[in-house]
Image 1: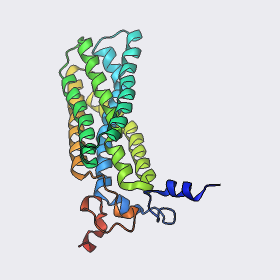
Image 2 (image 1 turned 90 degrees about the vertical axis):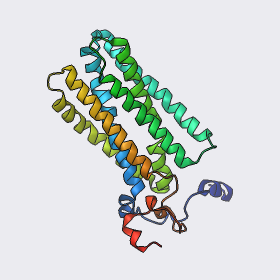
Image 3 (image 1 turned 135 degrees about the vertical axis):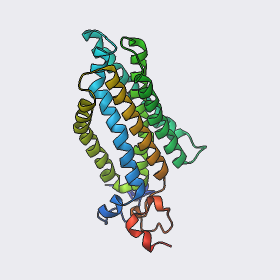
Length: 248
Protein backbone atom coordinates (compact mmCIF):
# COMPACT_ATOMS: atom_id res chain seq x y z
CA UNK A 1 0.00 0.00 0.00
CA UNK A 2 1.14 3.53 -0.79
CA UNK A 3 0.39 6.20 1.79
CA UNK A 4 -1.09 9.57 0.88
CA UNK A 5 2.25 11.24 1.63
CA UNK A 6 4.11 8.85 -0.67
CA UNK A 7 1.53 9.33 -3.41
CA UNK A 8 1.84 13.10 -3.14
CA UNK A 9 5.62 12.82 -3.40
CA UNK A 10 5.36 10.60 -6.48
CA UNK A 11 2.92 12.95 -8.21
CA UNK A 12 4.79 16.16 -7.35
CA UNK A 13 5.50 18.18 -10.51
CA UNK A 14 3.40 15.90 -12.70
CA UNK A 15 0.33 16.82 -14.68
CA UNK A 16 -2.98 15.71 -13.21
CA UNK A 17 -4.17 14.84 -16.70
CA UNK A 18 -1.31 12.45 -17.40
CA UNK A 19 -3.20 9.47 -15.98
CA UNK A 20 -6.44 9.99 -17.92
CA UNK A 21 -5.40 11.42 -21.27
CA UNK A 22 -4.21 9.38 -24.22
CA UNK A 23 -1.04 10.28 -26.09
CA UNK A 24 -1.60 13.40 -28.28
CA UNK A 25 0.23 12.02 -31.31
CA UNK A 26 -0.70 14.79 -33.75
CA UNK A 27 0.24 17.56 -31.32
CA UNK A 28 3.59 15.92 -30.59
CA UNK A 29 4.37 15.37 -34.27
CA UNK A 30 3.67 19.02 -35.09
CA UNK A 31 5.59 20.61 -32.20
CA UNK A 32 8.68 22.46 -33.54
CA UNK A 33 10.88 21.63 -30.55
CA UNK A 34 10.15 17.91 -30.93
CA UNK A 35 10.98 18.10 -34.63
CA UNK A 36 14.21 19.89 -33.72
CA UNK A 37 15.08 17.10 -31.29
CA UNK A 38 14.57 14.46 -33.96
CA UNK A 39 16.56 16.42 -36.55
CA UNK A 40 19.38 16.75 -34.03
CA UNK A 41 19.20 13.01 -33.48
CA UNK A 42 19.49 12.28 -37.21
CA UNK A 43 22.79 14.13 -37.61
CA UNK A 44 24.23 12.84 -34.36
CA UNK A 45 23.28 9.19 -34.85
CA UNK A 46 24.43 9.05 -38.47
CA UNK A 47 27.87 10.25 -37.37
CA UNK A 48 27.86 7.88 -34.41
CA UNK A 49 27.05 4.97 -36.70
CA UNK A 50 29.95 5.99 -38.92
CA UNK A 51 32.28 5.69 -35.94
CA UNK A 52 30.86 2.41 -34.71
CA UNK A 53 30.71 0.68 -38.09
CA UNK A 54 33.67 2.05 -39.98
CA UNK A 55 36.26 3.17 -37.43
CA UNK A 56 37.81 -0.35 -37.26
CA UNK A 57 38.23 -0.28 -41.05
CA UNK A 58 39.73 3.21 -40.90
CA UNK A 59 42.07 2.23 -38.06
CA UNK A 60 43.25 -0.86 -39.93
CA UNK A 61 43.52 0.47 -43.48
CA UNK A 62 44.41 4.15 -43.01
CA UNK A 63 46.09 4.35 -39.61
CA UNK A 64 47.69 0.96 -40.35
CA UNK A 65 47.29 -0.66 -36.95
CA UNK A 66 47.81 -4.41 -36.73
CA UNK A 67 44.76 -6.66 -36.50
CA UNK A 68 45.45 -7.31 -32.81
CA UNK A 69 45.75 -3.61 -31.96
CA UNK A 70 42.74 -2.58 -34.06
CA UNK A 71 40.28 -4.20 -31.65
CA UNK A 72 41.65 -2.34 -28.64
CA UNK A 73 41.98 0.92 -30.57
CA UNK A 74 38.33 0.69 -31.68
CA UNK A 75 37.10 -0.05 -28.13
CA UNK A 76 39.04 2.76 -26.44
CA UNK A 77 36.85 5.63 -27.75
CA UNK A 78 33.69 3.90 -26.47
CA UNK A 79 35.20 3.66 -22.99
CA UNK A 80 35.85 7.39 -22.95
CA UNK A 81 32.33 8.02 -24.23
CA UNK A 82 30.89 6.17 -21.22
CA UNK A 83 32.93 8.34 -18.87
CA UNK A 84 31.80 11.51 -20.63
CA UNK A 85 28.15 10.42 -20.30
CA UNK A 86 28.50 10.15 -16.53
CA UNK A 87 30.19 13.55 -16.26
CA UNK A 88 27.62 15.17 -18.57
CA UNK A 89 24.63 13.97 -16.59
CA UNK A 90 26.06 14.96 -13.23
CA UNK A 91 27.39 18.36 -14.30
CA UNK A 92 24.16 19.28 -16.10
CA UNK A 93 22.17 18.69 -12.92
CA UNK A 94 24.63 20.62 -10.75
CA UNK A 95 24.96 23.77 -12.87
CA UNK A 96 22.28 26.22 -11.79
CA UNK A 97 23.77 29.59 -12.74
CA UNK A 98 22.33 29.51 -16.28
CA UNK A 99 18.91 28.63 -17.64
CA UNK A 100 17.99 25.06 -18.53
CA UNK A 101 17.46 25.99 -22.18
CA UNK A 102 20.94 27.52 -22.38
CA UNK A 103 22.44 24.39 -20.85
CA UNK A 104 20.71 22.23 -23.45
CA UNK A 105 22.17 24.34 -26.25
CA UNK A 106 25.66 24.41 -24.74
CA UNK A 107 25.91 20.67 -24.14
CA UNK A 108 24.48 19.82 -27.54
CA UNK A 109 26.75 22.31 -29.31
CA UNK A 110 29.88 21.12 -27.51
CA UNK A 111 28.96 17.51 -28.29
CA UNK A 112 28.18 17.84 -31.98
CA UNK A 113 30.50 20.79 -32.59
CA UNK A 114 33.58 19.13 -31.11
CA UNK A 115 32.82 15.91 -32.98
CA UNK A 116 32.41 17.87 -36.23
CA UNK A 117 35.79 19.56 -35.71
CA UNK A 118 37.39 16.18 -35.03
CA UNK A 119 35.85 14.84 -38.24
CA UNK A 120 37.24 17.79 -40.19
CA UNK A 121 40.69 17.10 -38.76
CA UNK A 122 40.37 13.38 -39.54
CA UNK A 123 39.65 14.30 -43.14
CA UNK A 124 43.22 15.55 -43.47
CA UNK A 125 45.07 12.93 -41.44
CA UNK A 126 47.68 11.28 -43.63
CA UNK A 127 48.00 7.55 -44.06
CA UNK A 128 50.00 5.98 -41.26
CA UNK A 129 49.58 8.84 -38.76
CA UNK A 130 48.33 6.41 -36.15
CA UNK A 131 48.63 8.48 -32.97
CA UNK A 132 46.97 11.58 -34.39
CA UNK A 133 44.21 9.53 -35.98
CA UNK A 134 43.29 7.53 -32.89
CA UNK A 135 43.28 10.67 -30.72
CA UNK A 136 40.82 12.35 -33.10
CA UNK A 137 38.61 9.25 -33.31
CA UNK A 138 38.57 9.04 -29.52
CA UNK A 139 37.69 12.74 -29.22
CA UNK A 140 34.88 12.52 -31.78
CA UNK A 141 33.36 9.41 -30.21
CA UNK A 142 33.74 10.57 -26.61
CA UNK A 143 32.03 13.90 -27.25
CA UNK A 144 28.87 12.11 -28.35
CA UNK A 145 28.47 11.21 -24.69
CA UNK A 146 27.34 14.78 -24.02
CA UNK A 147 24.11 14.38 -25.99
CA UNK A 148 22.47 12.96 -22.87
CA UNK A 149 22.44 16.52 -21.56
CA UNK A 150 21.49 17.89 -24.98
CA UNK A 151 18.61 16.82 -27.21
CA UNK A 152 17.89 13.69 -25.14
CA UNK A 153 17.32 15.73 -21.98
CA UNK A 154 15.34 18.28 -23.97
CA UNK A 155 12.97 15.50 -25.05
CA UNK A 156 12.13 14.59 -21.46
CA UNK A 157 11.75 18.21 -20.33
CA UNK A 158 9.41 19.21 -23.14
CA UNK A 159 7.29 16.06 -23.43
CA UNK A 160 7.21 15.05 -19.74
CA UNK A 161 4.77 12.14 -19.30
CA UNK A 162 4.80 11.54 -23.06
CA UNK A 163 8.59 11.35 -23.28
CA UNK A 164 8.45 7.61 -23.94
CA UNK A 165 6.93 8.32 -27.38
CA UNK A 166 9.51 10.99 -28.24
CA UNK A 167 12.42 8.86 -27.03
CA UNK A 168 11.05 5.80 -28.83
CA UNK A 169 11.23 7.73 -32.08
CA UNK A 170 14.84 8.61 -31.33
CA UNK A 171 15.42 4.86 -31.11
CA UNK A 172 13.61 4.46 -34.44
CA UNK A 173 15.99 7.03 -35.92
CA UNK A 174 18.89 5.09 -34.40
CA UNK A 175 17.69 1.89 -36.09
CA UNK A 176 17.19 3.71 -39.40
CA UNK A 177 20.73 5.07 -39.34
CA UNK A 178 22.00 1.50 -39.01
CA UNK A 179 20.54 0.87 -42.46
CA UNK A 180 21.27 4.26 -44.03
CA UNK A 181 24.88 4.78 -42.92
CA UNK A 182 26.39 1.68 -44.62
CA UNK A 183 24.64 2.54 -47.89
CA UNK A 184 25.83 6.15 -47.86
CA UNK A 185 29.39 5.33 -46.82
CA UNK A 186 29.68 2.49 -49.34
CA UNK A 187 28.61 4.90 -52.07
CA UNK A 188 31.16 7.51 -50.96
CA UNK A 189 33.92 4.99 -50.27
CA UNK A 190 34.07 2.56 -53.22
CA UNK A 191 37.86 2.03 -53.18
CA UNK A 192 38.95 3.26 -49.75
CA UNK A 193 41.14 6.04 -51.13
CA UNK A 194 42.16 8.90 -48.85
CA UNK A 195 40.15 11.37 -50.91
CA UNK A 196 37.05 9.25 -50.38
CA UNK A 197 37.59 9.11 -46.61
CA UNK A 198 37.98 12.88 -46.67
CA UNK A 199 34.57 13.27 -48.33
CA UNK A 200 32.97 10.89 -45.82
CA UNK A 201 34.25 12.82 -42.81
CA UNK A 202 33.51 16.27 -44.20
CA UNK A 203 29.94 15.36 -45.17
CA UNK A 204 29.23 13.94 -41.73
CA UNK A 205 30.81 17.00 -40.11
CA UNK A 206 28.46 19.18 -42.12
CA UNK A 207 25.47 17.10 -41.04
CA UNK A 208 26.50 17.47 -37.40
CA UNK A 209 26.77 21.25 -37.62
CA UNK A 210 23.51 21.61 -39.54
CA UNK A 211 21.49 19.36 -37.23
CA UNK A 212 22.91 21.11 -34.16
CA UNK A 213 21.99 24.52 -35.58
CA UNK A 214 18.39 23.38 -36.12
CA UNK A 215 18.16 21.91 -32.63
CA UNK A 216 19.57 25.03 -30.95
CA UNK A 217 17.14 27.21 -32.89
CA UNK A 218 14.10 25.20 -31.76
CA UNK A 219 15.25 24.07 -28.31
CA UNK A 220 13.45 24.99 -25.10
CA UNK A 221 13.27 23.46 -21.65
CA UNK A 222 9.66 24.46 -21.02
CA UNK A 223 6.99 21.73 -21.10
CA UNK A 224 4.70 21.68 -24.10
CA UNK A 225 1.05 22.69 -23.57
CA UNK A 226 -0.11 19.17 -24.45
CA UNK A 227 1.58 17.90 -21.28
CA UNK A 228 -0.64 19.95 -19.00
CA UNK A 229 -3.96 21.59 -19.82
CA UNK A 230 -3.29 24.28 -17.21
CA UNK A 231 -0.47 25.74 -19.33
CA UNK A 232 -2.02 28.79 -20.98
CA UNK A 233 1.05 30.65 -22.22
CA UNK A 234 3.83 29.09 -24.26
CA UNK A 235 6.17 29.98 -27.09
CA UNK A 236 5.62 28.82 -30.65
CA UNK A 237 8.63 26.53 -30.31
CA UNK A 238 6.84 24.07 -28.04
CA UNK A 239 3.30 24.75 -29.29
CA UNK A 240 1.88 22.43 -31.99
CA UNK A 241 1.80 24.10 -35.39
CA UNK A 242 -1.79 22.96 -35.89
CA UNK A 243 -2.88 25.28 -33.08
CA UNK A 244 -0.91 28.38 -34.10
CA UNK A 245 -3.95 29.88 -35.74
CA UNK A 246 -5.89 29.71 -32.49
CA UNK A 247 -3.33 31.31 -30.15
CA UNK A 248 -3.26 34.96 -29.26
